[in-house]
Image 1 (cartoon, rainbow, N blue to C red):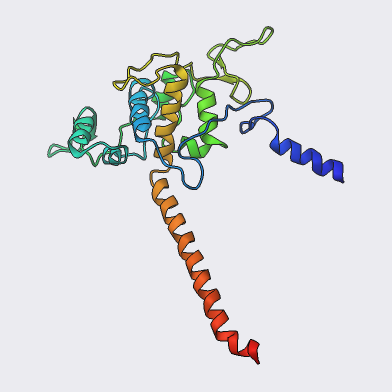
Image 2 (cartoon, rainbow, N blue to C red):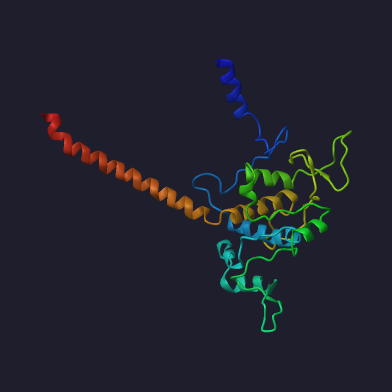
Length: 253
């Protein structure tokens, strides 16, 4: 019994976490600013991640749950959000003639999908359907570390490993074969602030941004949780003091 418990404890503590569907898939662990009960998002990193999404990911992956006005959380002001939205063509209508039309985006619009429908998306990606990224960090076990590992673990397959046509070797993916081509090689994005533009640096910024899209109200939730805990601690103190006062006469008797 003791040996069994020891083995279980060691398995929980040993090494990096395994990806969902796992096997021997190793996940790279990072210390994210948003981790832990007091964690917060890094707005500069989120803005860089948004830029990386626009320049690297948006051609295939949608953000169906995010509206342009939500970018205020990243530190953009109203004028900047209007300018970003206007860069996109949004289908609207019908007009007075019953026809659909396109117009520049508005802050209230959500990000348009890169494909008209799932069939068009599959046809453009050798049958694979690029997932929407709005909740991708929440949709995977150990999501932030998993996504970072996935973006930075492409490479040559080991000798003797056959890579099927249309697939790519990725050491962080379950089964090691993934349909998505390598998206990051380093210097894929030019950051105005001179931040790290290596594949690892861009991947970390993308994860910051996608962690926010998955839970935009995380910071509010954590602040509320901390305030609630402090209130309960104070309440416990007052309750204990009241109990001492109420029962003091009984104890003396």
